[in-house]
Length: 237
Image 1 (cartoon, one colour):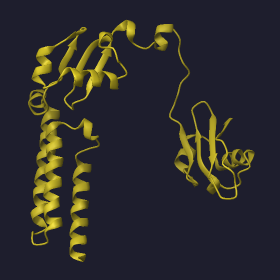
Image 2 (cartoon, rainbow, N blue to C red; image 1 turned 60 degrees about the vertical axis):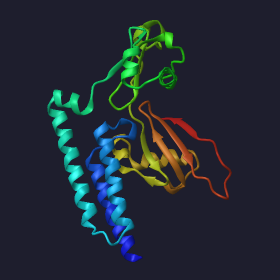
Image 3 (tube, rainbow, N blue to C red; image 1 turned 45 degrees about the vertical axis):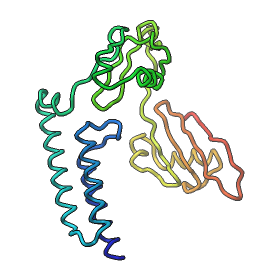
């Protein structure tokens, strides 16, 4: 039993490392050859972990070969546009200037129900509002609404909104994030003063403390058996 556990953990680590080396992508963003590699890696890892009679290297070596092949194809597609078109394919225009392309729908085995579903997922329930719909290589549909149907943006109103930076989590789950505190140009004394304004004496009592680019500090304390649940607090600093 111990041997099976050890073999499984080793294969698990090998698969995790292989997937990390392939890059950060969600399943819906994988290219076809990447999806094939992941499916094959999972099958190759399952056999040695289930059958101790199969040498461990019989699973590890094929995984490394597939990883090498995947990285090689990724490098080739990065360097050559022609190779990229062959390996990954080309996007297909399903709706071109408001007109549905039946040819592209048939070529991609895409029916009208699929198309309408993708439009709804893009917050466009009416197909008449679509100027372009492009089926990307990863299977997702990019939708461009007609000009008169797209949301209004600040440029349309000739206004310039205030800058919105990335909020910084200063405390998470009772732990101080020193790097974020330094990036915010604040110090620990300032943070403790702000906590005391909300009757919090210890960092460990804070669930989350986040500072946005406008200087608003969001604080929520942890729940406890001796305290009632409180609403999140916001202060301008």
